[in-house]
Amino acid sequence: MTSYKTLEAWKKSMQLVKEIYSVVKFYPEEKLYGLSVQTRRAAISVPSNIAEGLGRNHKKETVQFLHIARGSLYEVETLMSIAVMLNLMEETKFVEMSRVSDECIKILNGLISYFEKNKSGKNLLSS
View 1 (cartoon, rainbow, N blue to C red):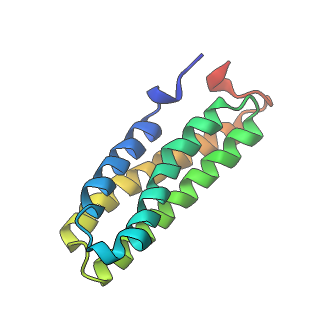
View 2: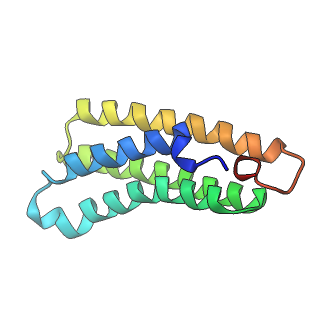
């Protein structure tokens, strides 16, 4: 069985989670239960959904969870844009983290395409 931990999409998304946590800890205290919590939750959702999707035994479910992971990446990007707009995150850090997010999106798109093209109903990575 291939582990989700070997997937580049999961590794990159874990890197993004680490970077998100390192940035949001510097948000002002009044943002603690708003933007910072939402950003962390969205970031955590990415590798979590990749792992859960790969744990499924049917490609339709796997693809569904990979789509959710991709949606969470777009949410993270939006939340980071809001942080820049509110001067909570520097533009340079946003650009750096957006590169990681964009890489994750590209890798996820490839993974989604792989599963959608697979004719069998089984999840090929977990066979």
